[in-house]
Image 1 (tube, helix red, strand yellow):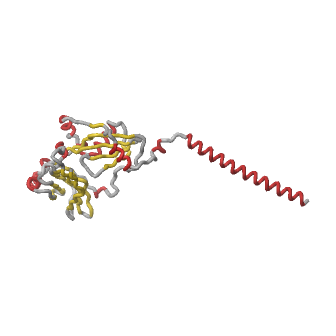
Image 2 (tube, one colour):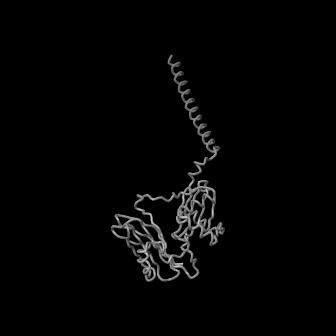
Image 3 (tube, helix red, strand yellow):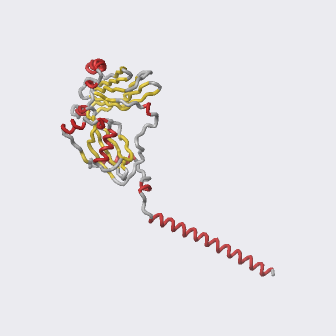
Length: 282
């Protein structure tokens, strides 16, 4: 009887071991099949959009390439017609329309690359997985209108750059308008004209009818220029960031701004502070 019981327990142990080995083998086979299926499954567009690249590496690749892409040219008649469209004075609208009409795709994200605002280089990622380097120029002699000057592209990447967006309340970033002297109210013209003619690289501000007017003037040099970077309002103080440029004698005169006259439909109870964030010497 004891011999029989001993044999029974030995048989049960052997059966248990064999069942455990079967389970382990089955799991291994299942894992192998899962891995094989994953390798054989086509990558979906959703998975592809997860692929990220180093933005700096992409910019460097564009810088080093000998092929600078496609250049665009405009005659004077075209420019005069284009400047009548108010959308052409917003570089984001010009960029989006260019991508839709000329590149036949949509923008997924974009970001300005480099510190210079005019001409402005922009890295654009599109919804079809392409990366473009787009160069845009704001033309001071055509009512501060933006045009696309050149573009270049590479394929098969996604960028980790998020679309430009304001993370703070919208009222911190007031809308503003860069205007010609002749477009301003007569009182503003009377205030700004002598400052433009006589000042040597100064900033000025005044208020009229609930609006703030800003004047940023370069030196008397014909090759100095100024660009607005952005305007914020913080605790009723208006913070104005701008950039100055010193170009050589061979500079493209169409991008030079001897002064900027800006209308902001807000008042600054705590005053206006100007910051020259970048000075570029060419």
